[in-house]
Image (tube, rainbow, N blue to C red):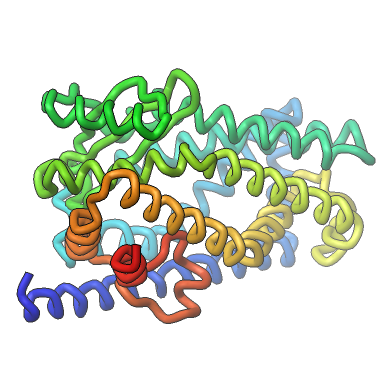
Length: 371
């Protein structure tokens, strides 16, 4: 890559990333303001009264109320969402996706999110209403179990809704991947190629699933541009996460965060509704208040979660390089990913603090050079 081309990529990447950061911050602030106004002005209470008066039993009314909240938010957030996920991606030539396909993905994503939300939140309300003292423990345990189940079924149930699996036809590279997995003590059920290029020109690879659903996922956008050595060291990084138990450690940290959040919500169960002139969190109208709590909680814990994740990523980088001996290929793959994905190579420390769950590309390259 020439110096001019590299600087051009860096300039574009910085502009692209700044747009993404700004929109993400705006969306968060916007959501907090909308939910605060909705709950604080009494609109949430009025809507809950109307829905409860028309629909019964409670879980049917809850489904309708939740659906209305999500649909209204989709409408008011549409300009920012459309700008971030469609206009920006086309402006920087990161996708060729048609607008009709974008709307289909939005509909499918919204449907999946609604179903998962309804399952988890309806149980939240049921247990909270039937166990006033211990609901936070019961719900925490269910959400932890639910997150593990999702990690297992996502590769076989959710991912195929958005991407098509293809048989991996490069037998030489597949054999190389299987040998690498065995060397690193990782059990791989199969290797698949997915049609990433239908939605984005960015490159990606992953090792997903738990138990019998473990599988290597390689984007066609990666296979078309990366050498076998680069693919191997990228997957060695993914396998290292399993070798070092990062997935289970992240599940444990996520479990701790879930338990802490529900316990704090339990402690605030009388104070929090009163701010918005509500009597109890068990009220249907209190759902926006619960959402507000989780948004604020997410903002507070995200920097710590990002820090832990970045530590794991560095360990996986080191493990991949030491296992394969492909330091130069690791560095070249990072350079390619930075250019292809328009990655922010050197973000401001505050941006890194709040947004980066991986070390920035330049840090990863410098770290690799020292191994």
